[in-house]
Image 1 (cartoon, rainbow, N blue to C red):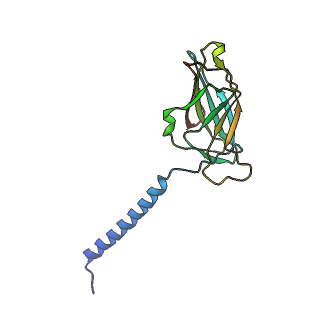
Image 2: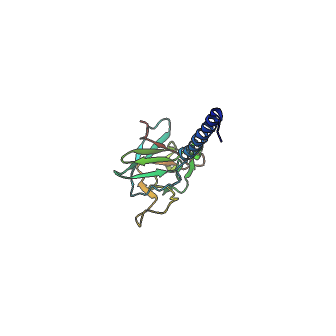
Image 3: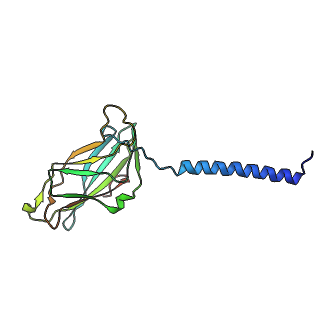
Length: 181
């Protein structure tokens, strides 16, 4: 049985096209996969609370996560934050943080998260928190007995308003890089 050259070319083109399409689909699935392994432990990152520039009663600070040498981990775009010693202050997540993508830090690279509050009330309507705690929820198997996703830092940013009108600390999304100066 002899196959005509035009049929042979058509079959060859279809086979090559199908193989390329399969490779593209497989590659697209891998390229679009979002990390879901939020496994940053306090032992993997150095974390600091860095003051921002105040203005017109507005106060800012950033929680900066810097991966230790040889370490790599992923933080979700939004992290839960609690204040100790500021029971009347409400901690809220900035709406922009709700859909923020995960951020991976590795080998000395930083990521940061902006905190915003007001500080204009009279002293009797302010509180000075003792500490701020950030928790990176682990969705993977912990890396050993030292796994601790909670990072607690002393609060060194002064008072936070705690009145009926002003009593909120807003937490921004986790972003790659150091905070803007």
